[in-house]
Each structure stands twice: as structure tokens, then as C-alpha cells.
Image (cartoon, rainbow, N blue to C red; front, side, top):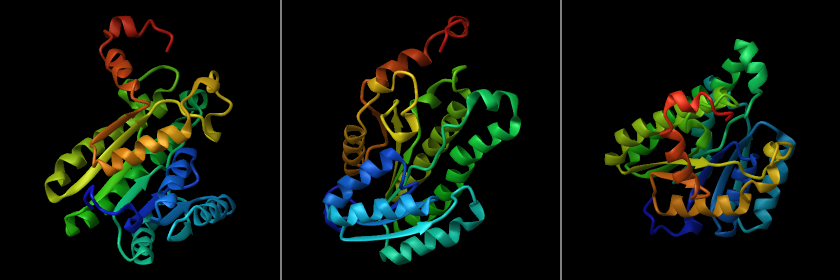
Amino acid sequence: MSSSTNPSSRKILVLGATSGIAEATCRIWASQGASLFLVARNAEKLAVVAADLRTRGASFVDTAVADLDDTEQHPALLAHAVNSLAGLDVAYLAHGVLGDQAQAEQDFHTAAHILHTNLMAPVSLLTWLANFFVQRRAGTIAVLSSVAGDRGRKSNYVYGSSKAGLSAFLAGLRNRVDREGVTVLTIKPGPTKTAMTAGMKGAEKFADVDKVAASIVKAVDARADSLYVPFQWQPIMFVIRHIPERVFKKLNL
């Protein structure tokens, strides 16, 4: 898909479609008349989102209820999505969990679950999708990572490490498939107002989800490689990444 492609003709797969950022992004694509295939775990929420997107102008909406942690089901699921859409231009991965850092510090299985959901399951999806797009020498893969992956901090290092691994995987994947006409966009949102963050300290200061979604749509259209959103997180994380370790370990982050 080139950046000049008519948005109304685009065929978009959304994995983790009931997440706050994904839903807000889909509302914009629906208003442009795109065709959407939505995947999520919760059937009731998925049905509500799908119905809303139809009323907003999506030219086609189909859904599949799936647990994306189950990597064995990925090939059949993705093939079904492509068949339903009769093609694919954009794959948008918004599948992930914040997890319980305190519990993960004490229990390996909790940590492993976070790492599986945020890294291993996306690697399975991305491998299939990248190979699909390379065969067609066209397509865009857009993935929600996080600014938390730029440096491990004691407050969320299990989640952060899963996103660091995802960002590194995406960087290598981009380097492999870019010459084949495939775009890989790494999206690094800062804290955003969604249902997942509603109970967090300082949530009232988090970024507006609709503004974050608008930035993502623009980055997809521009076939960008990476996006910090809101934009100020790019210089903030540049500074945080370059704080000397002897200083950083004493900070309460």
C-alpha cells in the first residue's frame, strides 16, 4: 500500500481491537470508509465495537473471537482474516497487557505470562504477517510498543522488558522487509487515558486517546518507521536513556 492509496479502499486487520487505543484508531479508519477485520478475546465487547464502527461508516466489518496468547491458532486466524477482507493492506497489533509488576517480582509464572502476551505472541503474529506481505511486496505492519521499553525502571521493568524485546524485534524485522516494499511502524505511546490506565496515579494528566489515535493514523499514512506519541516523549526518553547507570539506579522511577 502506498501513502497515496485511497483510505476508503484499505483493508485493515486489527489484533486486540477492544483496547482503548485500537478502538480510537478504528473509529478514524471507519469514518474514512475502510474495511476492518477485528480480533479480540471478549465477544461482548468486540460486538459492541464492531457495531459502533459500522455506524461510523466502515465499508465492511468482520470479527473473530480469539485468545491471541494461543499461538497455535495464529496461522488459521490470520488466513481467515485475509480471506474475509479479500486481501490485506494494514495489520495493526494492539494486543498486550500491563500486568502486575509487584506480583511478577515474586512469581515467575506471572512474569512469564506478561512476556508471552507482550512479546512471544506478537512475534508469532508478526512472523506470519511479514512473510505474507513480503510475498506481495506491499503492506504496512503497525505495532503498539511503549516508551516503557526504552529503559528498564523498577516500577514496571517486567512490562518494560517485554516492550523492549518487541521494539528490538520490530527494528530487525523492518531492516529485513523494508527492501521488499513492506513498512514496519513501531508505535511508542506514553501513558494514555484508556480503561486500562483509569485507576493509575496521575491518570488525569495522561494523553487524550483520540489525539494519540490521530497521530497513529497519520504515521501509518506516511509509512513512518517509528512514532513517539505524544511527540514530547521522544526527547524525554532520549534523556532517560542517557542517564548514567550509577545515577539512574538511585532514582525512584
